[in-house]
Image (cartoon, rainbow, N blue to C red; front, side, top):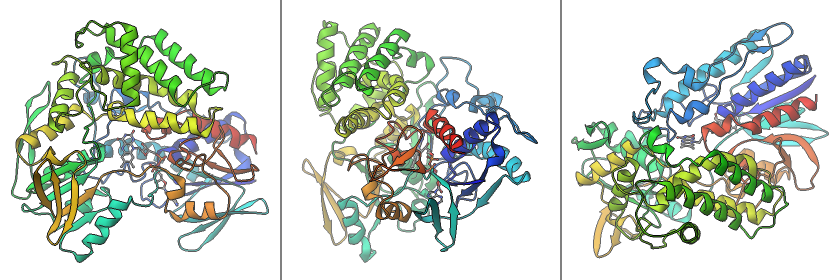
Length: 573
Ligand SMILES: Cc1cc2nc3c(=O)[nH]c(=O)nc-3n(C[C@H](O)[C@H](O)[C@H](O)COP(=O)(O)OP(=O)(O)OC[C@H]3O[C@@H](n4cnc5c(N)ncnc54)[C@H](O)[C@@H]3O)c2cc1C
């Protein structure tokens, strides 16, 4: 009997268990393995990201329409019992939430709603496996994994030791060393006169802080999705309210309360805001490449991924994005009208991909102030403004991403090329991972209410003073007494601070695929260690970034990598 441990039981741990059981049943090998799960969270299947007790202000950035791709689980038949099927997210939704018309604005649920789905799904498999004594669930944090004499020794925080033949790590997002400036704010706030939050989550820490009052000026480092959650926490959770003035565009007015902070100052290195997703399915369709174009995209990526086509960095990806992006743009009815042909457009796209501050009449001018850019993108997303080339390309890329992630993972190319591809994907996330329009309308409403001030958004000068941090930009100044860091650390394995990873590195069991990326794994998740000897330790998810492209979204947790792992795991029985 082979002993398997699954460490971490968020969405990926859950789907790994499902795929494993499906494969075990198909190969009639369920009697050959015992399964133990290590997880410290109360609710299995959701992890911290999808925790059901988090406030409603934490929204998912994928629409319920796009979550249609979160497929269900088939019925699993073992020789002596069955695990029932579980519906897809779309089927699980109550009827009132099922979006029927293509012109109804997309819905973006709070993360806790998706959490309910995941927990229900996890309970439906765990309860049956438990009833048949097929699984052990241990509430523990694993801090060390060592491999000796063909066995894994797992040590928990309580210093208990467990022995296994095979281990799967699905431990998701792990904190890394803070950036230098965040570390500095932490040290500077030790005097307790002013406050720094080194991370946004859990939001309750910020919401419940007695340091935040109506007198407080708060700076938020980062202009991404977590900044928006933090802003909602600082407004809605402080008894403020957004009144929607127009249900079709989500244009809103902010009704403040006496608990809301005086000023909120978001900032980043370039001050560029994210671009919201198109308002509804019909609007989104105009950016969707045709089947032929998607086929071409796949073919172009595959050639390089197989090692058959030579490339210089990520130029192959820029080339194919420019090819499809220019075709889609030329087909848009509501585009900026300039007499320019496909060849000209391609050229502009390539320059833009190389330099996102590139200025051109077809591109939203990045030197404008943040609120103006934000308002322009909102108008494009609702169809009220001519669409800029950069907005179009970002949406086209979003439609191509699943193919890129699937086709380029475990590509037979150099680590530098992988790193360049990831860099371009990250750069485009400003558009492709964009938030709901409603989020952006909330930011604009707060800007009109003079609570959010974007004057310092682009790389302000920050000086520590007796009464807080002085922000200056273009002759304007403001002193803030709280800084919140909303930038999520990248999964650079060498910078992860979690003991389990530190120890795996120290024990020479894992190695990064690239100094700036995650763990080196092969297609079925098994790690490739320093001396290239294969040992049955698999890493799936964010920490394998580099080996796998595209690890961050919930849909990826239910993607093909997990099936590959299960196949490999069962083949070793
Ligand atoms: C703040 C935040 C917001 C996000 N928002 C979105 C979003 O809107 N849309 C989207 O698609 N994706 C979002 N994501 C991406 C998210 O990571 C994935 O959707 C998904 O949660 C990844 O699942 P996972 O199981 O790989 O990791 P996780 O969800 O992180 O789960 C990992 C599990 O492992 C457990 N664990 C960790 N270390 C140990 C240990 N040492 N011992 C035992 N157990 C351990 C944790 O408790 C957790 O339950 C967000 C991520 C973050 C961090």
